[in-house]
Image 1 (spheres, rainbow, N blue to C red):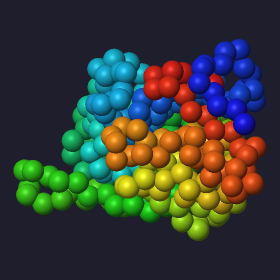
Image 2 (image 1 turned 120 degrees about the vertical axis):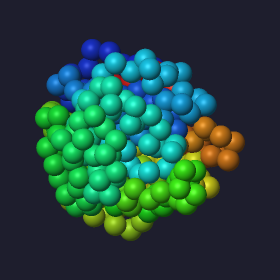
Image 3 (image 1 turned 90 degrees about the vertical axis):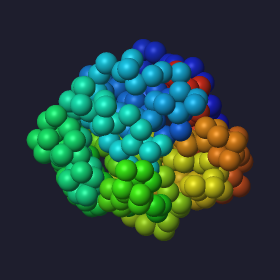
Length: 255
């Protein structure tokens, strides 16, 4: 079983992953497609393991935020205000964002689970996640809820489908995501405590039917203790040793 720790150059669209991604720690992922699109997902560049600041981000065509927790919303509003990407998001989040972004309602695309939209030349489908979504709003003195948590399946120009699960536990309907959305690569949380850990993530891989998994949401803090090696062991225990675990260093582009 491979463990890619270095970027792979010179691959064609169907060589390697079919896209290039960079993980910046936690759930913050940047994807560069073969068609030249740049996607940011859960852009918390302020996390303590990120080698890059949000100020250094100079391109974003499509922005996705899985839920309203601050460690996922992160720098999204500032980036969207500066770079003006298309931003599909759950309906309640779109209502809140429409009053805060310079592009207003024209910049966000409100949607919900099961829906698919065209944005920045890509197809984005919102799927279920099993988590919570409220975060503390100090000015209001109550939690602020920006809609339910979600995951996204993005179909790239070359037909490759990328699933970012956001924060979630494993759930049986991941089998339906696999059957209906057919992701090629899954970005799955493995840290535990707030999300599923390696054992549950291995079951998620089985339900989804993917052959490539990228572990995320681990190692940011000591409490997020799951590791890629533990995921490999759990996959092997399920007879899935052939599944490729792609676990690069933070900030290293990987294709």
